[in-house]
Length: 588
Image (cartoon, rainbow, N blue to C red):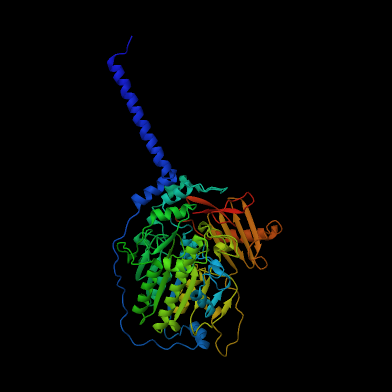
């Protein structure tokens, strides 16, 4: 007995439909795998549906100071401190704050071989220390970008202003959590239960209820300019202009390409083992904004371009006091060097280190251009230049030794993540070769610059930083030399449940994942290799009490941490980890 024709046709249609479903599923699965699975699918979406391209290059028109009488003569070197103390400086100094991005303390050749056994000298950055003041025990405001920048610009712990974590899109956190690093024992954790508590990425930023250095100096009569990276909020409510900058040129996010990926002028080094690097190549076009306008493409390599515009700002404002916040994004990833710098480093065999070296070489050359411009405009003697980095170098570059001799990386509270170069350069005010060894921090920039400018430091809030000028300016003539106490009896850092305290020579680190306490005596063990927590239980208890007391005065983060990233303390990301390796989970 045979089936009815309608039944046979129905079964045939079902077989064809099943076949088509199988083909579609196979195509989807193949595409999914070719894109790199869930992570690749996210990155594909970011590249083609979120990323935008800027308009063609445009000329920036900076405000020009009106012509005025020449600046008043400056006080002699031996009288500078007395005049600052009395507020009687006849002409406020210009202030130039130069911040590098993820620059390792060993990247400079000031006290060692630098990146590649001396093949990447940094004479221009070194000069700021050699002919000015070097703070040899200087700490970042935090171990990642945005919190450090918040501390720099407000003089307050980032955890006191709510900027505990670096703003990142949810898609970025998802992509990092989806990544499975080869050879890494500990994988990243994504907190999906916190997504609903997270504001839109554009609404994550430094509140304008905080008083920024730019706003303070603007009220004191300064013209204030920001050039470079911002990363303290993308919405207009958090923009540089909302925080007191008269003019701003740069990008609002955490990173940018330096040149288009396919430019004939650039050499790229992609870190395929690093999900952050992969995301950046997918998400970030090559573009900047001027005064919050539409994004446009800069005319050349970003470090060179930012310097070009900084020189124009210096020239435009030579007749009035100005504050220039020059926030380079070098040598942050994506790693890109111009061919000229790459070719000059042929002695470096490793491609990634050579590209990275080219970026540092460019950064050093451009900082030299800034100093030369101040000299050419006869402004150097009346300009306080402050140089630092936002934090230590990251493990994600895959380059060992960038923070040597210290352990740890960016996104850890070991010395390698927190110790930064910190130089003051003020010719004929600060004597060449001045060195100061007690701990100082990013929060001190605010009070130092404000005092130099004659601005009134706010008294309606806790300012964690102090004025460092008395520590490096010469004692006035006919004044008894008085030994000043260290500026910070203790320093504090927090990122989620990971916290650290330096009190005197002792440093305590406490983390919940893994549940671990480290205690180091930095006077005899500055590189943190001898953990004394088990041998010093009473000291651990004492320092924990101090840490908790400070922690209780901080505020709740303005947005939650969606990601916990595992970081090996002693190995870059491209090296496999062992069960014996120390590690932490960094909240962001």
